[in-house]
Amino acid sequence: MKLWGGRFESGPSEVFERFSGSLHFDRRLLDADIRGSQAWARALERVGILTPGEREQIVAAFDRIRQDAGLFEGAADEDVHTLVIRKLKEHVGELADKIHTGRSRNEQVSLDTRLWVREECGRARGLLVALLEALLDAAARWPEAVIPGYTHLRRAQPVLWAHYLLAYFEMFARDWERFGEARRRANVLPLGSGALAGSGFPFDREEMARDLGFDGITANSMDVSADRDFVLDFLYAASCAMLHLSRLAEDWILYSSEEFGWLELADEVTSGSSLMPQKKNPDSLELIRGKTGRVIGALTSLFITVKGLPLTYNRDMQEDKEPLFEAADQLAGSLEMACVVAASIRLNPARPLAAVEESWAVATDLAEALARSGVPFHQAHQRVGRLVLENLRQGKRPRDLTADDLRDFPPECLALLDPRKGIESRELPGGTGPRAVADALETARKRLAGMRG
Image (cartoon, rainbow, N blue to C red; front, side, top):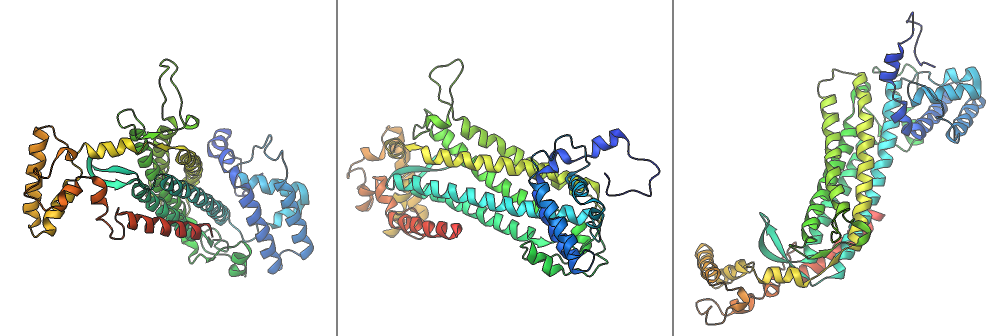
């Protein structure tokens, strides 16, 4: 069954039909297509195209189509939209020919995709909330643990483990917000736009928007026909979330290695080697890191598809679905996996603390103590740098120093050789001081409760 014809003397070739068909992937829009078509039937009743009885017949038939377990068996339709209309005709006969009155497939596809994206934004946000909770729980298990903070993958300054996890909390919280924004941009009704010029029937677009739970209506019918920005918004949010997942994965792959030895990954999220019996590989994290490229590739793919298209609709835009579905699947799977990993990790606090203590990560604390005593910071920086160099040459660590070694430094510097003391000075909001981190954790819990609401 075709939704077009009459102007053609012959049908499309088998090669063209096979090349252009999209049912194998847009079948995922089935529920959205049915919901949109049922709303359209109610709109047709309001403008007198359908009687109440006809509308009731059509809406009920759509419900039966949705429940048909064998709906796709042997289907050779061009896309999910033609499949649904063909099935509708099987249920209600020629009455089905009225359902497309005043509606273009361009706006129908836009509607279906917006409904689907809206649901996926909700799913992504729910999974992000679960991950955020797992990160906060991991912070609570070792609230006093000290680890090295890194710049350039070199030990920089000591921080609390909880402060480190709160950094990822902020990243994923921004991702939660991005999906909210992506949902808001998708959640406007395109119906009534026609193919590009608007509908010739007096539909109440605001009523249709309320019927389908949209926040409002689109403003320009040509823009509707050409627009895939809302898909790009979703793909960008998904790419950012995967970027953050990949960075977390990279950290934990390193920190769980023998060279670091801070973290132990649970058996449930690791695998072994077919040859080397001792191996415990971080496959779950490596797969998250690897799948990130597929999601970013989906964003890039649609960007390139859309960049040169003239207004308004072009068939190229059919190529938005597979990147969208691919990205949504990879994102959801990666978030689920990350939740399991975060819930099961075990920190060995002694190892990262030892890494701090054997390095000179306390150097900044010493320089700041000098600055508080009145030494200009640049000079303080030079003095501590010379102290570090001298003791590195002698193979001394901070804990090896005595009061005599620090006789030219303020008395407080001896205590600051313990990295936990320097941490206590960083109590500004957003810092790694114990009180600041405790407050940040409490605030994060409140924010998380609001995200669930």
